[in-house]
Length: 325
Ligand SMILES: [Zn+2]
Image (cartoon, rainbow, N blue to C red):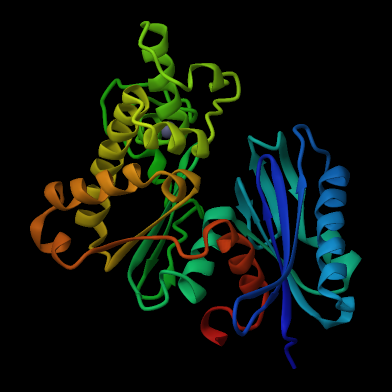
């Protein structure tokens, strides 16, 4: 018989978050966050994941044999069948086996998915997607990713990479994108793109309160810093946020026209922290999408926030996932 608890792991470029999740309710029993570093080997990466998992299990006060399974959502391209992380630019690794060493260590089944995929599972079962069978989750961070649910099925696509909305082409010969291409949505609407717009204004002598806080080397301008500047009426930051939000709305209008979803769930630090970004996007999208698919569209914020990934990863690993649910 299936157990009550599963482990969810959200493996990102800078942190690994592990959680013990009650799979019937999606409730977090305990969580542990650890930093990750570039240039991980398989050994160091598995060690970091295991250290976070061990701590989460201990904090939950559970025996390992009460755990039903382990799900990992990784920021990168994955081979779900073999449990291999094929490529993860932010972690500096490729072709790393994730599930097998975890199965050997914990004696339960482990599953690997993409980070956006597992966050979409989390929202689907316990967040903003609960009442919907046709929705798209869009997560805005350094880049922009999305998970697509059509007729209650997660759409993976031929090579398992469906949902790369950040690389939707919105400008011929436009800005260079991290993917190597040009004119992609995320080169205009992501947190990194907004930071670049602000940096360019600073370089042109426009004053802003965040000028000393932009680390363009890492593309870092924190969402909370952007939110604070907007609240204080900083015109450079507010204009950059509005421009980014309008671009996002243009990208999402194509999603509305193309997929005709019931709802679009927006998540990620920028969406959560900066009301202006969310509000402008919401206003704009209904103006520019086709009227009939836009008519009953609900644009909503993610309900699980940062925890969507670990909740969804735990569900993926549990027998409660998908058709067995
Ligand atoms: Zn791109």
